[in-house]
Amino acid sequence: MGKFRQLMYSLLLIVAGIAVIIFSAKDMKTAKMDPIDLNDPSVNWNDLEVGDHVEMDVNFLMDYFVSTEKDGNETDRVYAMPHIRDDGEYFTFDNFIGISAKSDMFSSLDSLVDESLEWWSSDEIELNTTPVHIEGKVAKLSKEKFGYFDSYLDKIDVVDSSVKEDSMYEYYIVPIQNDSPILIVVGVLCLLGGLAWGGIIVVKGRG
Image (spheres, rainbow, N blue to C red):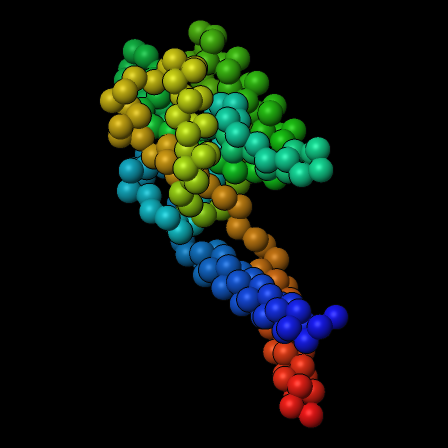
């Protein structure tokens, strides 16, 4: 392997280490913030900001509108979670946000979707679903994912334009990495390894 290529690999290792450290540190900082429960009537969804810590039991959920695959297997999905308003006579949706989930959550979330839609189409007043606990941080959807969310809301035909204009559906909740301290150690090792490797190559080149 040529010296230039070795230097490039060492640089990539350094950059990867720095990136892992930064993102893991952000997750640790977020996890220490007071969590927001979107079920709390005093919480205005439109006040949410990128980076906010969210922890709650999701008791009503709609289907996923985008998924990610790797080697032919689904690894991630983003589900649509509405805010339900009870005006005393009807239940309506007046806001939306996405919920990102890994494959180990698919089964429980799919069951919640089925229960939610069954309740929505019934005459029952009391919501009787099996809640799913989530913890994450607020992030902004990519342009592509936002487009899928927009198309999904148009397709289900339950939202008028005024709701979409005031909705938080350009945002979603992504899981917090619970192994952030371990990842920081990995990042530091990558950084130090890259620096050491690059240093050895430079010293040898001068020899």
